[in-house]
Amino acid sequence: MKLSPRAYAILWDGHAWAGAASSVILFAIFFLGPFALFAEQLGPWQEPAFREAPAVSQDAAIALAQRIVDEEAVNEPVWFGVSLPADEEPWLRLWHFDEGAFHYTWLHPVTGARIGERSDLGEFLNAMHFLEPLPYGTAIAGIASIVLLFLAGTGLALQLGRFLREALQFRPGGKARRTQWSDAHKVVGSVTLPFVIVFALTGAILCLADLLQPTVTQALFDGDAAAHSRATEWPNPPAASGKPAKAPDLAAAFRIATARYPDAEHRWFFIDNLGDENVSMDLPGEQDGTLGRYTNVRFAGDGSVTWTRDAGGSNPYASAMALLFSMHFAGWAGYGGKMLFAALSLLTAFGILAGNLLWLERRRAKGFARFDALLERLTAGGCAAMPAAVAAVFLANQLLPLDLDGRAELEHGAFFAAALAVIAWALVARAPARAAAHALLGSAAVLFAVPFIDAVRFGRLPLDPRTGWLYGTEVGLVALALVLAGAAFAIGRIVRRSSASIARPLAAPPETEPETIAPPRAA
Amino acid sequence: MATHVHGLGRVSAAIVAAPAAGLLASLAAAAVLPASPEIRLLTWALAGFPAAAAAPCFALLAKSGARAWAGSAVTAAAAGLALVLA
Image 1 (tube, chains in turn orange, green):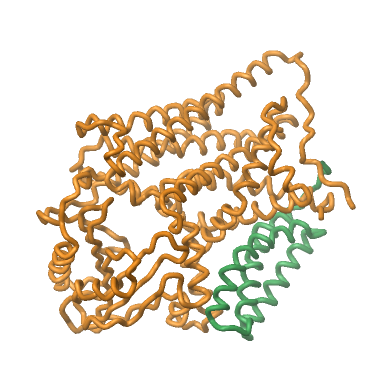
Image 2 (cartoon, helix red, strand yellow):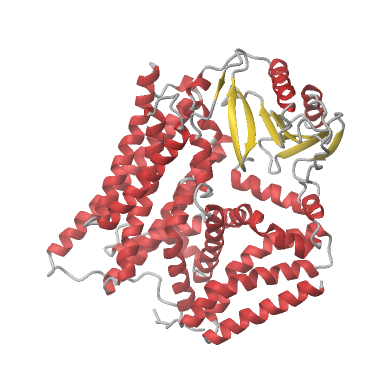
C-alpha cells in the first residue's frame, strides 16, 4: 500500500513543517529525558550531606517521622508529607504545601539537624523535561506531544511500502549531505518509532490531563468529580471537618501497607487534613520490575483502611494507565532498562536534529528563505542550548556556597542564563553551526570537569566505583561530555567542508539526491 | 517530488480547527459509548490525542480550505450535539 503522489506531497510538507516548528522544544524534552529518568539517583550528587548514610533502623525513622507529624498536627496543614530515608536520600524529607507549591526540608534521622532546599538539581531537570518551570510550559509540552504523534503518524504514512528498506538504509559515504541526514532521520525515526509513540501519547496525557479535566468530567461523568476520581483510581480525600484530632499512627499504617503489598517499597506518608478529624493518609508503594508498579493504601485517622489500590490498577482505565506510565518512566526495567531508555531518548533527540538538518540541506540547494536562515540559527542555538544549560546547572551546583540563600533558584538561573546565552550567540553569530560547535565543546569540557571539581572539593578519588550513586553520575557526565565533544568535532568538520566547497565554486556540482523523497508512482 | 501549493485555509484549519474537532469528536464518541465510565474514560484517553494528531492530516488532504474548515466545523458541531444529548 502506498500513498497517492498528492497525499505523499501534502503529508511530506506537513511532516517537515510541523517538525521544523516543534523541533527545538522536542529536542529539549528528549535531551532532558535521561536526567528525568535518573532524577532520584542525583540526590547524593546535588546534596553532599547525603553522601554519608547515617545508620538508622526503619523503626527509629518511623518513630522520628511520628514525632514530626505529631508536632505538625497542631498547625493543621491542608497537606503534609514525610518520606523515610533511602539509599539515595538517607535523610527524612518533610514536605509542606504553601502558596500553591511544594517545599521541603531535610531532617537528619539521628541528630535531628535540618537543612532546607539547597539544591533540587534532579527534580529541576525532571521538571524541565516537562517544561514545568516555564510559563505555560506543561501545556506547551502537551501540545508538543500531540505534534510528536502527528510526526510519528505522518512519518509512518510516508514510509508505507518502504518501511523496512528505509529503516535499514544508511549511506554515510554518500557525497550529498542531505542524503546522509535523510538516511539518519529515517533510520533513527524507524528504530525509535514504538518508543516515540508511547512517549508522545503518555506525554500528552501527563501534561494535558489536568488542563482538560473539567471538560472530561463534564462530558463523561456529568460533572461528578468524585466519579471521575474513582475511575482514575485516585479518589479525592474527604474535606476537613474543622474539628481537631490527633495525628494518625504511622507505624501501624506502615505495618498494614507492608503486609498488604510486601513486594512494594513503602517510605512515603502523604497526609491530607493533618490535625483534623477527617485526616486522610496515603502510603503509596512502588514495585520495581513490574509493568503496573504503583500501589496505595489510604487510612482514616482511626487507622482503618479506607481505600487500596493494587499494582496494575483494578479497572481497565487504571490498568492501562499504570502500564503506559510504567513504560514512560521505565519503572518496570531496573537500571539497565533505564539506561536503554536514556540512550533511546538521546537518539530521538538526534533524530529530531537530523530532520532539521535535512530540511536545511534541501533548502540550501534551492536558496535559503528568511525562515530557513532563522531555522538554521534556532536549530544551532536551541540544540546547543540544552547541553550548555545542563553543564551550567551542574557547574553552579559545584561552585555556589552550600548555605547561600536561594541557592536552588540560582542553579535554575544558571540553567536559563546559559541556554539563553547560547541561543542569542547562535542568532547573531556569523556561522551559527560553528557557534553551536563551540558551545558543545565548552559544555563537554564543563561536564567532564565537574566530577573532578567535586572530587577536589570533597577530597576523594573521582570515578571511584565504591561511591555508588556518585560513580553512576560521574560516568554519566563523562559519557555525555564525550558524546558532546564528538558532536562538536563532527559539526566543525562539516563546517570546514562547507567552507572549502564555497571556496571552490567551480568544483563539481553537488550530487543529485537519489534517496527517497520522491513520491511513489500512482498505482 | 511533486510540488503542492498549500492554501492558507487548509493550513489554518489543520492548525486551529482540526485538532479541536478531533478532540471533541473523540470525547463525544467516548461519551455515547455504551460502556462503563472507566471504559469511556479509557477510550477518550487513548483516542483523544491521536485524534487531535490525525485530524490535521485530513484537513491538509482536503480539496480546499473551505472544505477543511467545513469538515472541522461539521465534525465539531456533530460532536457538540452528541455531547449535549448524551
